Every structure is written in structure tokens, then in C-alpha cells.
Image (cartoon, rainbow, N blue to C red):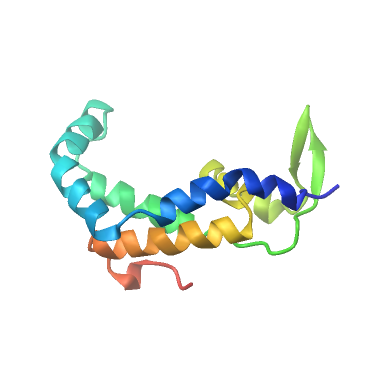
Length: 130
């Protein structure tokens, strides 16, 4: 059993919406909202850690998601399926969701995410190679 590539089509609008984000405007908006984001982060119990670090880790994790050009093999798991490749199954839930979007959509999202990261001032040296 393999992932049906037609299932990726349902995510194309999401990928296209992400691609339409202006990286500089997103960074500016983040800067404007940052005090409230930091406050919410503290309210969640995160102490002595800037949300910038959390955001950087999240962006890096998504950029590290492998792109699988051929439909991945699946195996039954409970009432659903899991990736037969343990390397894929061990990805974080966010990485697996990005992978489920399909290679085209994943590339689009990762490209814009990289641009947003750079606009936020995250050094390119902290981002995974393409």
C-alpha cells in the first residue's frame, strides 16, 4: 500500500497561500506582535526562554523534513496507516504533516519558510542546507 499522489492535491491551496506570504511583511508583523507572543509564551509556563528560540527550532525542524518524491509505502496501524519507513514514521507530527502534503507542496512551503526565516533575522548558517 502506498500513498495516493492524488491526496496531495487537497493541500495545494494551503501551499499556494503560504507562497503568497510576503516574508518581509511577515517578519514585521511578528515584530509588532512579539510582546504579546512573549507574554503568551510565559503564560504557558515557559520561563527564561525567548519565543524567538522556539520559533527558530520549529522552522529548522520543518526545513529538515525530507522530501520524498515517490509515494511512500504504508503499513496498517490501528484503524489507519503508518509509514513503513521508520525514518519517516519517527518524524515529529508537524514534519509528518508537511510530508503528507506531497513533494510539490512541501517544496513550496519550505522555500517560503526559509525566506521568512531569513527575513526574521535567523542566520542562514542556522538553517539546514536545501
